[in-house]
Every structure is written in structure tokens, then in C-alpha cells.
Length: 400
Image (cartoon, rainbow, N blue to C red):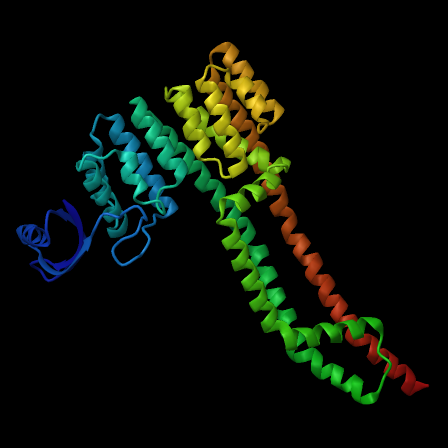
């Protein structure tokens, strides 16, 4: 079975569109005619391969709102005892064409005999590594419905946090961009004309004015080249970071920062808590939680800790030797192991760490706007002074 996106008209001449599942294009047209629709256009949405692309090379993506809704509905339907393929078909019926096509392609892969996690892996642009690792652990432990419920809460919480940060940074970012463009235009078109008047009069220019002239000349003569060189440097850096050895070196240096440690530890602990509370075995849960850590150096250390836990070492000792978790979180792990409530202890630790991180992000975002105002105001003031000082000097000479 494959998914086909269609455009058709009904008996009253109204346009209809959507996605239909059929074995072939002919079967899809026949099914549409059986529903009283006259097909006008039919596009096959073939299942994506490992690269996560359709025929035509366009990446399959889901909006954050669609991902939250689909995850919540999957958790509800699987908890009601529905099979995965049936749940996917049911949810696809109420989605717009693009999300519906992804869901029907997922159903096709599952019907072919592959696991739900393998089907999600065909769409890496739509489902993150954390999402796929959590589903794989839930399938292996037979607790997919509970994992999906916890996953829905996680995705929804992350979506709210991302939206709040984006909205908070929108105004400062727009303010900084507009201010930078205005300063660039002044440097390129306005300042040279004013400076020309000073130069024609042969005035002895102050240091601040000479610095402004130098910057203005550099922007006019070398601005395009500077942008081109900057682009080349960024491109070269991106290519270098694709190589594992360079990426590991950079991540090892970043891992020394306390903030980076806390972010990765919080993400790992939250995932581990979610899986353990869904009755996923510790080793499988730790493997899945390790896979979602963004920092490759910390991920490698956690993989070593996972091997030690698999060999019988306690989680607290393994994580202590890995030296990637804050001390407070290690204490919570030790307490949870001692009480037999490791999942709950990790959940409390991750919640506390996330609350601290959220407060830190809000404080930084709150400081961004006044910082931009101060910086841009200082630059404008420097430009105004650089222009006014020679004028004041010329007026003083004329009066003298």
C-alpha cells in the first residue's frame, strides 16, 4: 500500500483534496470514483528511504504543533489497545495532506513487517533522534503506549519552552537587525559625504572622527569581501565539524562549561526518567537516553557508563566515573537506587535542573533587549560625536 495525494471534484463541482491509501494509482482513482469524486490530480507519496526524502529530494518535516498532536493521539489510541498500523491510519484521516502522507507512509512500512522505530527512522527530519530512541525502547520493552504518553508530555513541554524563547527573542533580534542595517547605511552613504566637507576645508580632525572615516572607508571598499570571507570561513568550519575527530575535540572543550554539562545532563536524566517510569529496563533506557545527548564527548562517556552498568556496576558509580553529571544529580541517583525509586528520583532531578535552566534562559533573554539598546545607542552616540566635534571646531575657528 502507498499514499497518494489527490485533487478531485465532487458531484456538485466542489474541489476536494486529501490523501488516500491504495496499492496502485489506478486503485486510488477507482477508490475516489467509488466515493463519488472525479480525480483531477494524483501524486504518489512514496515511502522515504534512509535519507528521509521523497522522490524529488524534498525533506519530510512536521511542524511542532503537528508533532505534538500526532504523539498525543498515538498515545491515546495505543493505550486503547489499537494496533500501530490502525492508529496511524486513524490519525492520518484527520490530518492535512502533508502530515497525512507521512503517517500513511509510516503505516506502509509497519505493514511490511518493520518496527515502528524503523519506520520513524525513514523520516529523520520529522522525528528526532530522541523521539526514535524512545519509541525503540518502548517497543523492545512492550510498553510503547506508556512511552508515547510520556513522550507526548515531553514534546509538548519542549514546544512551549521553544515558543516562549522565540517570542522573547523576536523583538531584540529585530531591533538589533534594524539598528545594524541603519548604521551600515550611514557608514556607506551618509558619513562619506559629511567627511568630504571636512577634508575640503583642510580641518584637523579629532581622533574619533578619523576612526569613523577609517571604518566608513573599510565598509565601502571591503564590506562585500569581508562578507564573502566570513561565509567561506563559516562553510570551512562546518565542513571540519562534520569530521568526527574535529567534532569530538570541540565538544570536549564545550563539555568543560558548566552550562553545557547541565543542559546535556538534564536532557539525559529526563529521558532516562521517562523510560524507567515506563518500565523500560535500565540498560535499554540508559542506551536510549545516551543516544539523545547532543554533545558527542559526553555521549561517549555515557556509553562507557552504560557498558559498566551492563557488566553489573551501579548506575551511581558508573556516572560518577563518567564525570558528566552535576554532583546534585549524582546524589539524587544514589538516593533513587537506594530507595528503589530511581525513575522518580531522576524525574525530580531533571525537573529541578530544567527549572533552573529555564530561569537562567529567561534572565538572559531579559538582559538581551537592554544590552542591544545600550550597544546600539553607544554606537550611534559615537557616530554623532565623531560628526559634531569637527563642526564645533570649525565654528570655533570661524568665530576666532
